[in-house]
Length: 310
Length: 306
Image 1 (cartoon, rainbow over the protein chains, first blue to last red):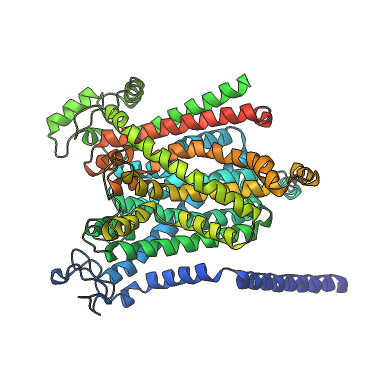
Image 2: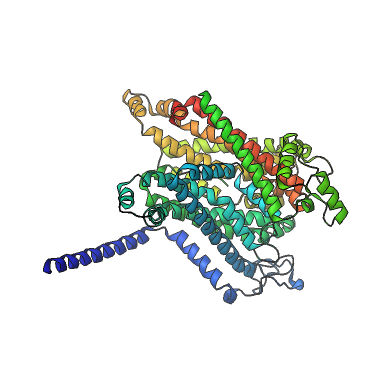
C-alpha cells in the first residue's frame, strides 16, 4: 500500500516537474521568437477586433465633396482624413482598418479549412494505404496539374464574388500541400513501435489515427499553416484585384488596389501605396514567423528550405 | 527505364482526365453551363439552342464524352466577346506571354544563381543577409503591387518607362521585373541551399585537400552540381510564370494569355476562361512529365527507386 502511494506521489511529482519543464521550454522558446512579426500580427489582430471603435469613418460610405484628398502631410490634406480619401471620398485609413478584418478572417479560415481537409486526407492516405492511398494521391496529382492561382481564378469565376466563397475556394485549392507532407510523415510514423503496440493493445484504427498519429504530425501542419497564411492573403488580394474576390463596396486590400489603379497615372499614389504596404507587412510577418517556426521545429532541415512560389 | 516512362506517361494522362472531370463537374455544380456559354441576358430559346449545340440536354455521361471529344479536337468553344474560337485566341496571345516569361526567367536566373552562390560561400555575412532580405521580400510582395509601385516611380514621376502596352524592350522591363522577383527569390534560396549542401560534401573536401584554389573549387566543382536542381525547377517555373502572370499582364496591359484570362473574367466570357485554364494545366502536366523523365535519365536512383 505504502509503496504504491510512494509510486503515485513520485509519478505526480514527475508529472509536475514535466509540466514545469514544459512551461519553461515554452517560455524560453517565446523569448527567442522573432519579435517583429509577432508584433505586427498582434497589431493586426487588435485592429481587426476593434475596427468598429478605432476607425474614424464608415469604410463603405464616402463624402463626394472630399474625393481624392491626399494624406494629411500634403497640400489639401486634412486631419479628418489622415491617409487621404479615394474616388468616392471614402476614408483610406478606415478602409485599411476594416480591410485588416477581411484579410485576417479570410486568411485564417482558409488556412484552417485547407489544413483540416489536407491533414485528414493525408493521415487517411498514409495510414490506411491501399486503394484509399491511391485515390487520394491521384487526386492530389490532378490538383497539382493546375497552378494554384489559375485554379482559384477558375473557381472564383464560377461562383458569386464573396468573402466566404473565397475561403472555400482557397481551402479547395490549397489542401494538397498539407496532404502530401502529412502522408509522408504518417508513412514513417506508422512503422514506429508505439503504433504497433497500440495495435496489439487492441486500439481501433480510428483511435490510433486520432490519439497517436495526429499529435505527431501537428508540428508540420502548423508550420505549413503559418507559411500558407501569407500565401492565402496574397491569393485573396489577387482575386479581389481581378474582380472575382471580395465584392465591392467591402474594403478588402486587394480591391482597394484595383480601385486605386485608375488613379495612379493621375498621381493619386496614396490609393495604391497604403493597401500594398499593409499586405506586405502582414505577409512578411507570416513568412518570417513560418520560417522561424520551421527551423525551430526541425533544426536539421533549416538550410534546405522548400521553395514554393505562388 | 521504359517501364518508368510508361508509368509516368500514364500518371500524366490520369491527371489530365481527372482535371477535365474536375472542371466539367465544377461548371455543372455551380450553375447552368448554358448560361456560361451564352451572352449575359440571353433569351430562353437561345439557351435551348446552346443546350442542343453542346449536347447539354443529354445525360451527364454523354455530356462528358462530348466534352472530352471536343477538347481532343481542339474545340474549346467560341469566345462570346471576340466571336472566334477560344483556342485561336489563346494561340495568338501565347508568344507574348512566352516572351515575357522568358525575359523574367533569364532575369531571375541571372540574379538568383550568382547571389545564391555568393550567399552560400559567404554565409552569415552582410551579403548573405542582404540576399535573405531580398528573397523574403520577393516572396512577401504581391507581384501586382510591385508592378503598381514601378509604374508610380518609373512612369508617373520619373517618366522613364512606358506604363502599358508592348512594343520594344522598354515595355518589357517593368513587367519582367515584377513577374521575376518572386522567382528570383525562389531560385536564390534554392541555389543557396544546394550550394551549402554541395560545399559540405566529401568531394569538395578532396578538391580542397588537393590544394585547388578556392575559386576553382567553387567555380568548377561546386557550381555545376549546385545549379542542377535550379535549372530543373526553372523549366517548371517557366510554365508557371505564363500562368501566374495574369495579374502582372493586367497591370501593364501586356497582350499575353494572362491578359486574355482577365478579359475573359471581366467580360464574363467563360469559353476563354476555360480554355486558358485548361491549356495552362496541359502545359504544366507536360513540362512536369518531361522534367521527371529527364531526371530519371540523369539519376538512376529515381528510375529504380519506385
